[in-house]
Image 1 (cartoon, rainbow, N blue to C red):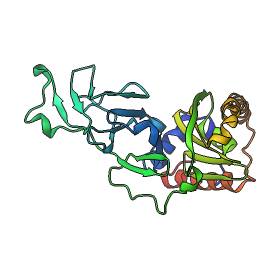
Image 2: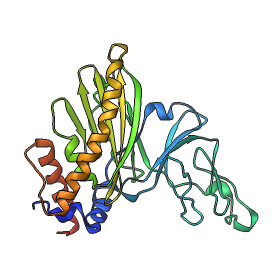
Image 3: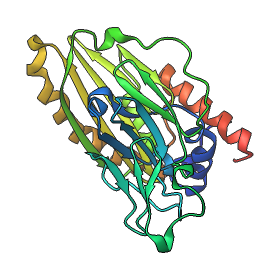
Image 4: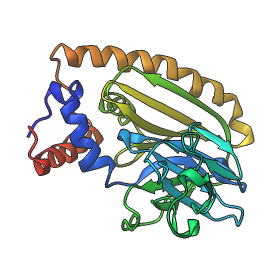
Length: 277
């Protein structure tokens, strides 16, 4: 099966990817520095799945569905922050950093002990400098060990986020080609440029809106390269949006690079498994 331009523009393809890819695979939600201290949390909704990861008061990292158990409404509304508890603003249910319900108004309190009400857990796996989550709580861990050499001896010296009006595949196809590139299917790309390591996290938000978060790791001698590596995101965003416009006009994707060819093959298998065309 060859990917069609419709796979880059129509919601049906995105819905298939949501269930066949994003609900099953390990996805990057944070770098370790974002969850280094008790109370720090991050949230995202890759492919439409609302996720939340936090560092507890005990220093343990946990991940949950970012949905209150009362009415399945969004709990954490910021992309990142620091707190002692998560409070649902709709009906007042409050959870601690272990995901346990600790308070609720009498009118909306659950039957039985509140401690029996917990946020639904997700799988969480530290992987090198990254924190990965999986919508399935008991997902098999990623085989093999992360290549810590990518960030060994380096510290995070910069980060930037951009939102592009394009499909996530369009943006990913621009990031995958090149030398010194490592790709963790489906949404994480690492690139080494001399003494600088670039970590790109892709967050598919809706079919035609994709967020890219870039983290820069470098030693002292390479800090001069940080700003150029972040500034290039403006050009990358423009290129992705231009390429998306071409897709909408029926221009097919280029598949010459091995990573891009693998991307297409994996997605074709996901569509076939779902019976999509």
